[in-house]
Length: 411
Length: 86
Image (cartoon, rainbow over all chains, first blue to last red; front, side, top):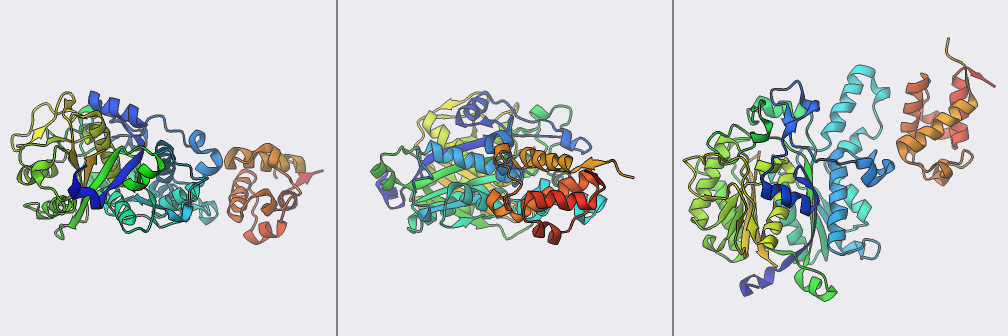
């Protein structure tokens, strides 16, 4: 372990992944390495200009959670709950025996229970108030994702939902790290969840001009860093991690999968949806994360980029990567496979970055046929690239100008 | 004119709805127990009423449901509002 990072030694001990690439780390990693895009026509979106999305394959909430639990939760909370349980089990922890008062939950989310809002609003307009479920509001509230996880896991400490759009999941892990360093918690279950593949949300993103319209070939629509990219593909999913102070993990004989060694965040304070020209806000977040970790950009081996596949983001982000890290890091955007899971994306990608460090390999960015000539960084394409990874970063940027960056270290 | 329905039909509907929609174990359903004793909270009772209302076109208020106390009470309430055959 780098002695400079000792004072900030927080370990990742468990992962829970329900993503369009698959359920569980093994399925996800296989799909990422194969560069297999999850984008497919989506019947719920059939009348929209972008009628495809990336959904979590084979997710059956009734089977995973029982009908009784599942029916009281919107899909974003269902995904979070299963991912949280998986992460805790992966960490070798048991909520029946832990001191719940020392356990925190931080779950990033962007849009709340959109399926519930839309379904119940339709009931109100078409059939009147008496057909509106009394559970409508509690199911749709953004905070309910953390409330549900805390309740299920008997986690009695802080329970928080940071909402910074597509940076939410990354911010959640950063805040969780701080809860451990401050001594507020001994265990934090953290991550992000999103399930907003509804006509209103996806239609609204279409109106904004953010989505790919490659309707003749959804599987090649999410193509970060490619010359012919035309927008992102909306996705759903949940990624959760368990964080503990490394010394506590050693004391209990647990397994350290990775370390959170730095975190930084910033706001562009520029525009609701457009990246700031010159990307000063993004650069501030990256540099803050590196300063927090006590390292310089050239020490970073791998960057899991925000890499949305929008024309504006990818070229601007690559330019900042080149400026801050130089030409050394292997850069990938796993959104080529998963699409963009909004508030869950950063947490899912942090977990993917842990997997990359464990496998000593960076998965390729899917669908890069011709690298954008304006991009001058080492983007991994075609197949996974093997390299021992000591330090990696994961970038997330969101509407509102929110930027968040995690620095992860090898176990 | 509504279709004749028996209290047993309503009782079966309530039980099926609790099992199918709310995941309550069939063996755990006790029509004489209070909502609390059954582990059913007031929101579940409200939602249960919504399902029954929609199926049988019966209107019940929250107040009436809360005063019913037990599933037997709910069935009687629904039955009283609906033409039932003994």
